[in-house]
Length: 432
Image (cartoon, rainbow, N blue to C red):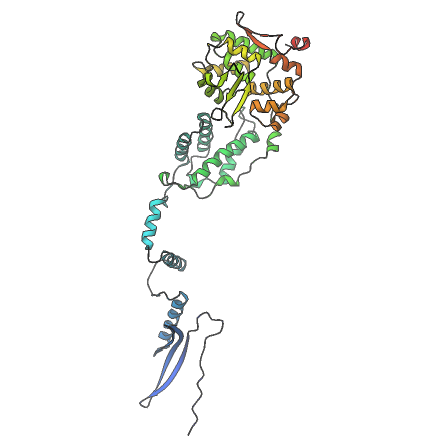
């Protein structure tokens, strides 16, 4: 009796993730010798499985499909014709797996498109700016601030050919900022102007990148301004012009002229700007609407609440004797007269006043007279460090005394120095 031939089991490499193998299998049936191919090495319902094929190619195809099926944790794998590449097929399978049996992939896509921006939506920069400014107005931003935003963004649209919002890049913004010029049309704009324009563009693109179904945002998926340089405070300060302060003689002349011009309609406004440091643009307008409520001559205080203040922080300003004299003498005059913008523009041009010069003068003369950085900071609504850095020791104490001694002489319609106020010295009086 011959000894049975020992069979060698073919197994997959130990490093293989799935142990499915294909091996030849020879057998004799009714005296006929057959060769087949056996696929084995996977489990179903906890039992090892195997399958026999006559053709080697069919066996290998089955083994490959079974291996894919096992790798995909039992999901049925079918051979289908599709225009998708391997990555897209894999992504679709992953999405379906995450959705489970609760939602179909079609339902998920339809929901997304209903609640998010259409994938093919585009908008010109200028059209986006209109929507942005409308939302700024609805959000309660000051009209003057909105005007500034509109000026910057409209200029950008004109200078860059009004590109689509999502096509704006950092180099485009960089080129625009480098092209900014001063009023002479030749000198490059200051670093402060660069930063201001950059900030406005940055605010717009941050907003444009937010999700909002009503406006089909986001319009762009990255902020191009992030790649544009911004100058530090120190670099900006290197170009800052000296603080503009009106001389004593010019303050007296200015107030005298205003007392006589158009019935003194701007005298009260400038008195508050010079002797209380109230900002002549937004703050004075809001203060004028609540004059009786916020200006108290009995307690000698001007209360500027957060909704009036430019910085959104409340402050109180002490009414000096000289300011009290102006307010009492001009009690019947409104703070903001009819045609205020036009009249203010004429006055500023005539006296060659720079922006915030009246406020700079108030702080400088206040620090000079009282020698208190802290008190000046409280009344002006600035920090002590700012007052100390920009306003300390710009004027002598004697000039501060004269400044806060200027009062109106209604009979002569002119500004005079009251020697009963802060007792200015003869030398200071001669200076004007």
